[in-house]
Image (tube, rainbow, N blue to C red; front, top):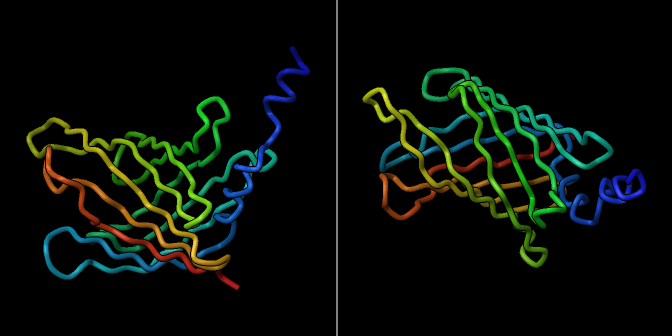
Length: 169
């Protein structure tokens, strides 16, 4: 059994894709909360490889998002049993976790994530909404992450956010 576990725990080439995220990043954000011009901001991200490169953890900070400081943390890995990338995210705007699964396209150097998020409904309850993130690796020092979700339950997804990560030198 130990031999099987050792083999199971070995990183595979898919884990190398995760290493592109490692580093200290300056982040330019744009979020569209309503039609018109986006709310823009500047933040930072620190990402590190952990557990022998099997996962990457991220700590993201945005001093002003909708008049409040925003802080988030996540972990990303490649799950050999699912044959997919996996992500868990938590932040200061919620008390829950968001989870997503993703696939990487080598040709376009793009990771596409899908999952669900839970939001307050404004009446004391919650609603669950599908979410999508598209992460484009534009060279070793630039990553662009797009956020997609429906503006209302049952509507088609629209791009409602973007973060451009630029590696600090």
